Image (cartoon, rainbow, N blue to C red; front, side, top):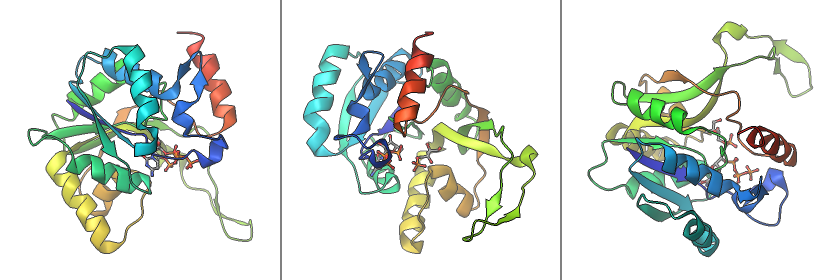
Length: 225
Ligand SMILES: Nc1ccn([C@@H]2O[C@H](COP(=O)(O)OP(=O)(O)OP(=O)(O)O)[C@@H](O)[C@H]2O)c(=O)n1
Ligand SMILES: C[C@](O)(CO)[C@H](O)COP(=O)(O)O
């Protein structure tokens, strides 16, 4: 299975002086933890790191220490996650029929989750790891007034890995560019194009490290592994 890792963000919400994937948690960088999970997932055979060229030297130095056995290619990132993933799709080897996309910032996903998604994408056009929402969610207007309370039974928090048929996902991204759609995950492009996306049970611990608080939580979770 081909794996694309979007890693080209700037980490504004983290407020660090560099790409947050270069920050350390439990004595390894975030990108190192993500790559180690990909290395340990037996279903993954090829890894594309989508990243800004100014980070490539740092990423290569980290990878040299990890001594990965799988082929890794560097693909230039775009100015949004959506653009970065599209760059990644266009850089996939021709033989790639299905792909998993997994955020570099979700550095706590387990190899088992990557393997489960790789197995499931053989049987459907699109899937995402997701978990049921635990909080009561409110829809709020611009004045801070609640408009409605959606039924929680139908609410799931989207994670990565997300898996897709490569040809279909390329077509959905192209349609997204034509229509000017701006989305925060690839499943949303499938949804807008009317293609079914299935849920695979995600992991409570598979948080996206976004803020300094998330770094502390990640440290705690990793201390137990
Ligand atoms: N232009 C971009 C923006 C984001 N990402 C990647 O998409 C994932 C999810 O994005 P997010 O957590 O929002 O990362 P950042 O964009 O770095 O954070 P922020 O939004 O706080 O700036 C991350 O692995 C990030 O590196 C990317 O590949 N290309
Ligand atoms: C794809 C994603 O991880 C699903 O939760 C997320 O949408 C990407 O990050 P963003 O910061 O919400 O763009």
